[in-house]
Length: 276
Image 1 (cartoon, one colour):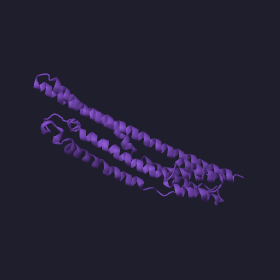
Image 2 (tube, one colour):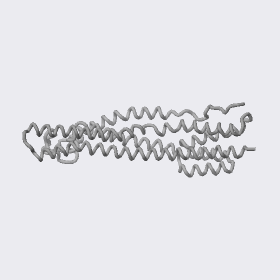
Image 3 (cartoon, rainbow, N blue to C red):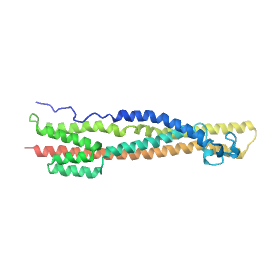
Image 4 (cartoon, rainbow, N blue to C red):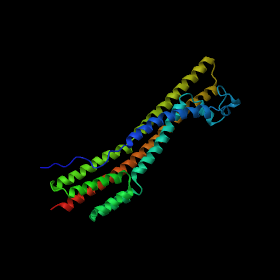
């Protein structure tokens, strides 16, 4: 008995390599940019009373952030990473979705399949483009191959189509999920780094008060306020990371569902039209 072919009809994707290079370059660049912002924008003398960066009181919001300490540029680099990787994911997932509405595309494919018009379905894939269209087109190509194969049973042919769609999906999905791990990681380390900066600030504040030998409520309040800048930045970074991560996973789930739904329609259509 002949076995269903296992060779996928979809080309191997190379986007994961370029995406990995993007991450490798983005992380150090964000760190450098954050350091430059910290020293040359937040650390401007105009942001402090009497222009004294070292001892002057913060004259505005920028100066107050600068007073947060040396961990501030680290947290700022996290925030920049979230923004940059979010933009990159929006572009990649947008391209993967194709040129039109995915739900409308799925309905058109199902209509063409129900009418037995495989050429129309292929034409819709060419118009739509993107990951969903690539997977469906791979399934339709295997559909054509199985129509001319006289060695396999209908069930084996249906299994071969389904397997090819699954393999094509496995090639497309990693590209969509690339760099999401970085955004997910920033959810945790943003808050933790912010809390660490606050702890360091509190230690410094109380150490200076102890050395002064007297309680100065104004100085203590100012020091605590500066220390809490780290917490505020860390929580803001984590909140943005959570929102972006959930947005992207939701978009990927929608694309996966569209692929599964259409792939199931292809297999069912083939089985129904070739059963004797």
